[in-house]
Image 1 (spheres, rainbow, N blue to C red):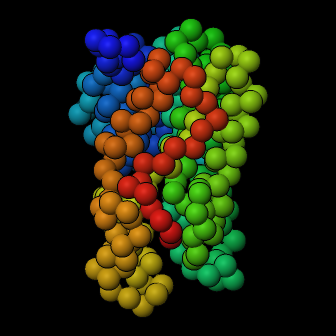
Image 2 (tube, rainbow, N blue to C red):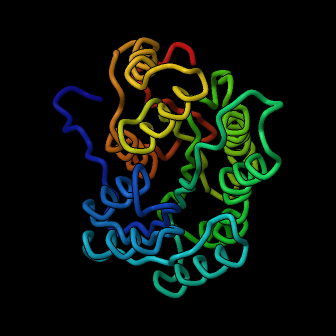
Amino acid sequence: MSEGATPRAIVVRDLRVLVTAGASGIGRAIAQAFAAGGAHVHITDVDEAAVADTVSQIPGLSATAGDASSPQDADRAAADVGARFGGLDVLVNNVGVAGPTGVIDSLSDGDVERTIDINLKSHFYFLNRCVPLLRGSTRNPGVVAMSSVAGRLGYGNRTPYAATKWAIVGLVKSLAVELGPDGVRANAILPGVVEGPRMDRVIAARAAAEGAGFDAVRDSYLGKISLRRMVQAEDVANLALFLSSDLARNITGQAISVDGNVEYL
């Protein structure tokens, strides 16, 4: 920046944004941040009560209740976005579940399949239906995919989850090559230990699997983070806004952590 230049702000006003699993946790924080910045935001979520609450709490928000891992529900969401906005500038593929906790030979086929369906197949379904809309955008369009710190580190006893999160990193790097000539960018965000009810459930499951206490397992997570603190959903939302703004117009194919530097899992 030249001397005396004014720093540029992150501007997302009037962007047309779709956020999957946008009615709670990180997804809701992202939807709220975009809406607060003046974007036009549509969310999907399988939890109809949470959808109703989120729409009532965030002015101007629209929604399609449905299961992101269902091709038919992805069809409905994409059709609703096209009808409401006439196009799309940002797809935030946020949906995901923690998956089962346990050694590989203890996992049920159903739990593994459900994790892959929700964490990975849903991304393909929404990309398949929304990329044509993104190609028509003149607003520096992009895909923001939610991976995890478990998409850069090995994660024992959580192999289905880690496998899907590593796959998302490969997906966005490949999308960046495929869609770059069309001017569409693709990046992944890798959140670390995000404070909230979902992380509490993960800690409780790990504590049960290891026969340890909840507080001891929580402290063990903090001990692996250089900053010795969990991140907030808003920290992840801030990066999603930046990656969707013109400030990031030449950032694509990247996997960026928001984790306080998790050293190992």
